Amino acid sequence: MSKPNIALIGMGLIGSSLGHALKKNNLVAHVSGYARSPETRARALDIGFVDSVHDTAIEACADADIVFFNTPLSAIKGLAEEIIPTLKDNVILTDVGSVKKGVIDELTPLLGGRVHLVPGHPIAGTEESGPDSGFAELFDGRWCILTPSGETSLIAVEQIAKLWRDMGSEVEFMEAEHHDLVLAITSHLPHLIAYNIVGTASQLESDTRSDVIKYSASGFRDFTRIASSDPIMWRDIFLQNKDAVLEMLGRFSEDLTALQRAIRRGDGEHLERIFTTTRAIRKSVVEAGQDTDAPNFGRDK
Amino acid sequence: MSKPNIALIGMGLIGSSLGHALKKNNLVAHVSGYARSPETRARALDIGFVDSVHDTAIEACADADIVFFNTPLSAIKGLAEEIIPTLKDNVILTDVGSVKKGVIDELTPLLGGRVHLVPGHPIAGTEESGPDSGFAELFDGRWCILTPSGETSLIAVEQIAKLWRDMGSEVEFMEAEHHDLVLAITSHLPHLIAYNIVGTASQLESDTRSDVIKYSASGFRDFTRIASSDPIMWRDIFLQNKDAVLEMLGRFSEDLTALQRAIRRGDGEHLERIFTTTRAIRKSVVEAGQDTDAPNFGRDK
Image 1 (tube, rainbow over the protein chains, first blue to last red):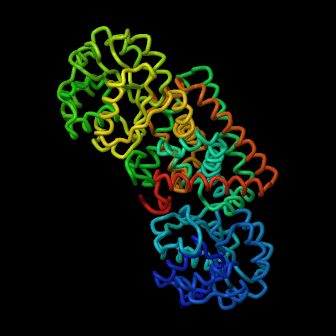
Image 2: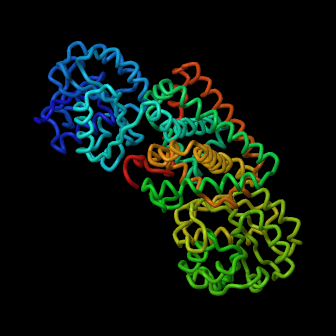
Image 3: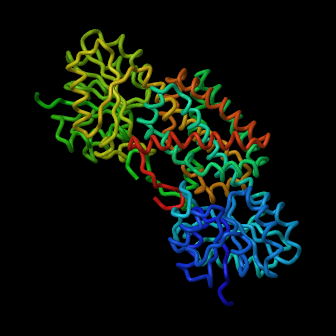
């Protein structure tokens, strides 16, 4: 199979990393790019992770065989409506969003049996954003979850899966709804909680707040890192994954209320029991190769 | 001044690190050690961060000029009652606990005007525990907060401050109540939340739970690391810092309810506003030299 032309719609952290990874691994004939901001387009061409940039998404996709949506979730539908009527037959649309059911519901009615949709989600990222933040190794050794429907062309699915594998990712297939539930607890709720505690701290009296910053290495620091992620991207994630996030947030809040009650009543047995059972999950995470055993807040990373 | 004899009561992560740091920096004439478990005592002598170990705290403190309590908070009072009557005059008692007012309230009535109390808290640690987890550099470049009362002998205070500085720490003085409030939000609440979300995840149906572990790199992993900290130590912290933790937990829960409401109602403006204001705190943390700008969950640490 000849190498495809690939269009990147959105060239922030993920879009720029895709450009770098596609080129470095020699997987692409031509990478065209579109971003809403002219500065991002100019910068992308300067850095060189695209071969061409275009003033409209339609132009960027004119010769594309594969189109990657790398924008915040709320922008995808409008862009898809704009470009789909102008695409060649059998173009594959894919994305990198953290919520999958919303994209499928929005895009499926637009496909017209003429183009394919293979929704994807690389489990990789940093807290940085913008075209300068990308690097070719971002997806290397990371999971990429694909959530195509049962009716999707297997050839299209396999082509996207192979691209991710060739960028170093390990590909898994999942039902979109199950993906959204799992990510609600592994990613969306942790980010919500981190944003929330940093927000709570930001409203403290100023002398306490300055000490919170000064002594942040005792745990709080890690939350500020998570809470520095892109606000627009995360706004969209919570709006699109509302049901699963509210379900997990409900469970979290119930459990937190039980801990609060134990603290108020001096119930050390309850606290010790919860604090002990959590160790089994940590052990499983380390055994699954998802973390090493040693990192800590005392040593500099 | 000749070098002091120092007794370590408790030889887990902090106790063993103290032994290593005192010896490496040549700050001590003799380090004696006591731990409740005979295995820990034997191991401490084997590793060599103490010069002698003893079957009772009284024996370990017989010739001590300075006594460090490095046990869980709930053990300190009983040990102090046991050893204080047997100590030489002008011995300095100090500790490394994460809550300061409780220790002061418990120990002050026991001092009898004959021994000194200089409460301390090194802002340093790892999630590991036990005598094998310590290392001499744990306190290097870290804050150590001392919270002596206004009546404490300045000579005793300065001797403890110098010890920490000689182990590489930067010493700050603080009112005990202010310390407990600041630590409630920088350390205690983050740990409570981490324990809680890992607890919530551990109760998921088993197929979802195994996917949570598999895809934990998307944020959850960092919480499992925090939630692998020593359960007894943390039980005691929440019981001793009840008021400040409940105060901060109350604020956190109110703010979380507001976020939940915004998600349920699709109020993207509220979400975006909160997610944007948290960036200022992150910026301050980085500017204060408490973290670097780059770490992320995509690159291996």
